Structures are given as C-alpha cells and as structure tokens.
Image (cartoon, rainbow, N blue to C red; front, side):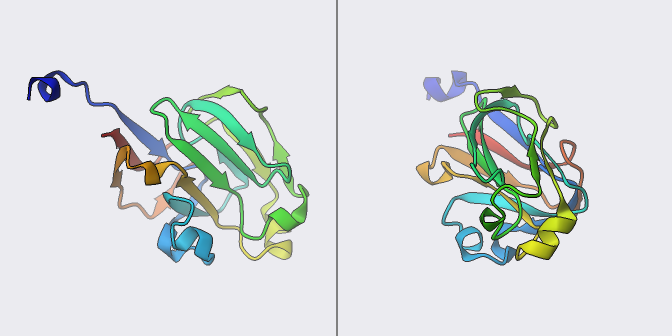
Length: 163
C-alpha cells in the first residue's frame, strides 16, 4: 500500500503524427494494422505530407525504404510510424527523411516529408498508422482520445501511463 502511495505516476501524451482525419486502427485497410498484430495505436488520413514526432524521444529506426520510422519515447514506448500502405514497394521514392538514427527529437519536430500525390498514385493508401510496438508487453495503460480532425504535433490522440 505504501509503495503505491508514494509511487510517482509516469504518463505521456502522444500527439498526432500528421495533420488530417483521425482513423481508428481497426479501420485501417491492412490486416497487419487493423488486427493490431504490431501493437495498439491509431492512424491518420493525412492532408499534409509533413510527418512529425508524436513524442519526445530518440529515433531508433528508419526503414531503408524511408516509409517508416521508430521513436523510443521518454516513457519507454517504442512507437512505429508507417507512412502509407504498401509503400515499401516505392523503394524510398516520395519520401525525404529529415533526421538520422540516434537523433533526439521533440514533439512536433518534422521527421519525414512525404509526397502524398505520388503515394496516392503508386501505393494502396496514404493513411499513416502509428503503433506502440511494445504495447503487448502490458507495461502501459492507454487513454484513447475521441478526436476527428487532428493537427500534427498539436492534437493529443492518446495518453499512456506506465503500469
């Protein structure tokens, strides 16, 4: 009991990673995301190609094909942002990465500039899923926000609390 009384609650707000329309992960037209095989999360149907850091943290992954990146947050969440669906086949075309592996980033910092017109013509969707890949470890409680239109780096889409 005393341990719980003095335990400091650690929580983190996770912001929208792109500006556009909020999409529930279950509604993403790709079973890897919609069935949460990679973890819990949300998605955005973007109206702008600027994809930003949803949290402060460290860049721990940049896909060779530039269509995805990973951030380890200060709370320890490993967040994967996947730009578009079936975009690995674009082999990096249409993506400009603005950071390097190991960089420390701040909330709202631009990470990738994506050419949405190119992606729309050459991939199956422009939707951008964002998943907490280590959510299956059951270390976090999530508070999902009821939002519709989101602004990159500004709209809180969920809050995570360490268990």
